[in-house]
Length: 143
Length: 167
Image (cartoon, rainbow over all chains, first blue to last red; front, side, top):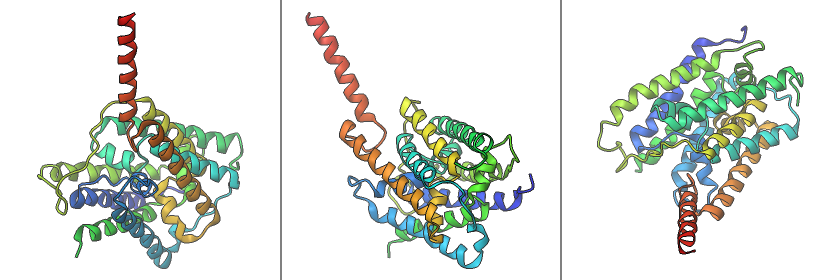
């Protein structure tokens, strides 16, 4: 457990909670990133402006972190391009089919004690754990 | 001045700062949490604890209001049924998440690093969302939730019953 960062993770988590709740407080919406982003890709939605603004805010935060605390975005991905592409596809399809991701179900949904979100979060935590364990212990961390 | 738009921008900004501070923008930390039989990193549990408890406590006060501050009404999901799409979607999502350690938020934030893998991930994710969205609206006529699909199923059942009764 040498990588355990309880204080930073709790503070960061609280910031995520505040960001999600500010969406509810000001605009009455769920702060689910896959829902907000996915709506941008759906031609039927006529409400692209606020979605684009949210994503712009998200990326502006990334730029700020890159300028003032680049360690938080310092990572390496040692997986093949194929694995990355497959993972992206699964996350995209899964988030839309299951109506949410770690923010919509995991934070807002659990935070509202919504039964669908409790189930969805339990399921993605489980399949996520099984996948990570298989990748690390059967494929030696590289796929 | 469109205050609602400004508030959405700052929600997104705070969200990404939280993602970075919490360590979720480091895919190794995420897979290190999910792989609990290896060298376990429980940090993500504290991210969840901070985020969920904040949301849980504050939503109780906010939902007592008649309306949000900058909008006419709350737009919250109302469905409570557990269906196959929810479970199958969450299962697929988890596999993708556990494979690399990226979920949509951290992946979008990390685009600013111009890391090749992140861009491939986000492009594939967008493609997945787009493919799902177009198939879904073609077959169910509904962009979300599948309520239209259930209506078709009920309609077909009704027609079948009518035919059976007529025969």
